Image 1 (cartoon, rainbow, N blue to C red):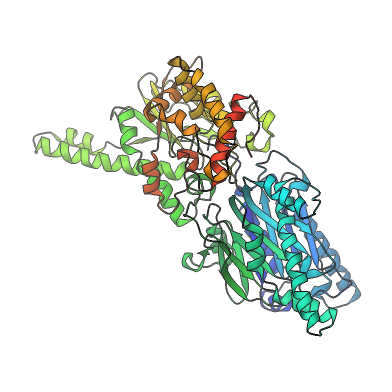
Image 2: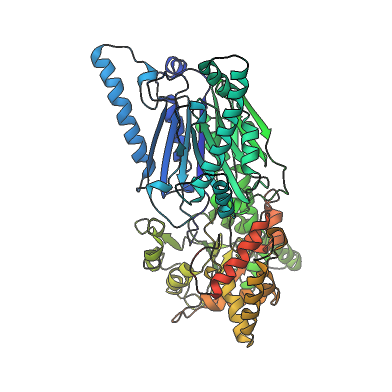
Length: 631
C-alpha cells in the first residue's frame, strides 16, 4: 500500500486446557504456551507496531504468590522486547532451581501461566505512550474481581459511557476509551460478584467458600450484556478474570474480526484465521468465526462455549480487512483480492485504449500484489478472446509470422516500484511522516519506452493521495511514460471511519477535496457554508435520528467527475505524463467480497447510529479548521 492507514489492533488469547506438567512431558518444555502465544502475536505484527503487551494468569496460584503477570512496551520491536524480558525472568527462576538441585515447579516460575492475553497496538487515537498499551488491568484482592482487558475497538459514544459511570458514583482515573470500557465492565463484574456472594453467604457458606463458588458461577454473558448494551461502535473485547475465566466479545454487526479454535489441549482466539491455522497446524474448516453479538467464553475449569450477548444487527463486516488489513495468506482473502483486480480489467483496458502492446503493468508493493495477479488474469482472458477473434478473421490466410505475433501478445509486466525498507514512514509520528514520503520508493529504470508506453500501476486504495502525488507519480514520471494510470482496487474513500481505522478526518481524503474543488469550479462554494449550518443543527438531534448530510455533497456530482478531479489533483507541477485514476466500484467490491459488506467509508451508510454523527462532526471540524478526529 502506498499510504499507511493505521487500523484495528490484533488480539491473541490462549487458554491451556491441561496442567503445565502435561506440556512439559509431551513437548519437553514448560514454555510451550509462551512459545505459542509469541507466535500468535508475531504472526499478527502487521496489525500493530505502536506497542505490544502480554498478560498471563496462573489459575492455581496459592495466596501470597503472584497470579497475574503483565509485560508491555511502546518501543520499536515491542514484541521482541516484551518476550526478551519475560524469558529473562523465566531463565532466572529455572536457573536458580537447577543450581539448588530442585525440580522445576511451574507455580514458582513467572509467566508459566494457564491463560494468556496478547495485544498488538496501532494508535488510532493519536497518542503514543505505555499507558495506552494493552492489556490493561483492574486489580483486586478478590481474584474474581480482577479484570484484565485488551481490545480491538473504537466506540463513537465513549463520552456518554464515561458520563454514565460518573452518574453511578465512579471517579475513573482517565477519560480514554480503554479505561472507560475497563471500568464499565469492571463495575458489572463487581456487581455480579456481590450478587453471588450474598446468595452463597445466605446459604451458610464461609466467606472463603463463597468466594470460590462466586468465581465458579459468574454469569459472564450477563456481565458483558449489561456492560455493552449502550456501546456504539465496532469491537472485539478480550478479557481475563483473575480466577481464570476468559472471554472474547464481538460487536453485533461483526465489524471487527475474531476467529476461534479449541481442542483438548488449547482454546484460542485471534484476529485472523491463518494465525491459528499456522501456529496450531489445523485446517481452515477447524477455525471458526465468532458470530457477531456473541462471546467466546472459556471458564476457569477449561469449559469452552459461545453465548449470545446482544441482539445481532445487520452483518457489516469491515471490507477493508479483505482489501488491505488482513494478511493475504488466508485462502478466501487471497481469492477475493485477486477478484478485485480481475473486476478492474475492463476500465483499465479502456484507460489505455486497449493498447496492450504499448502498456506496462505493475503494482505498488506489497499488499496490492494479489489484486495485480487478478488484473493480469483478466487481461489474459481478454487477450484469449481477442486472439480467437483475430484467428477467425485470418481464416488461415496469414503467414506464420503473423500468427506468431498474435500468439505472443501478452501483458507486459515489470517490477517498477521498489520500496526502500530503510525508509518506512509508518515508524514515524504524524508530523514528520510527510518529510519522508518523497523517498520511500525507488524505480527500475529501462522498463518503459519514453513517450510511447502507458504505465499502469495498481494500489489497494487511495486515501489522502499524498504519497502518490509527492513520491510515486513523480518517480514514475522519470521513466518517461506517455500516460500513468493509477488503479485502486477499492472504491473512493469518501467518509470517515469511527470503528478502528485511522481515517477520521474528512479533509484528509482526496475524494472529499475533489468534491470541494468541483464546487469551486462551478462557483458554488457557498454551498459548504449552508451544509455546515445544517450539520451543526443535525448533530443536536437524538443520535438515532441523525442523517449523514455529507452524502449530499457527493450526490451533486457523478462519481466519474469526482474521479477525473482526483486525477487532476494528483498531477503535481513538473509531471509530464498524463494522469488517470481508475477506481473499483462499490458493486464490484461486493461481488468480490460478498461476506464483508461493511462499506461505510465508501458509501456513507454506517452500521450504527453513531456513524452518522461522526460524519457530520467531521465535516463541521473541517469547516472550522479543527485538525482532530470527530469522536
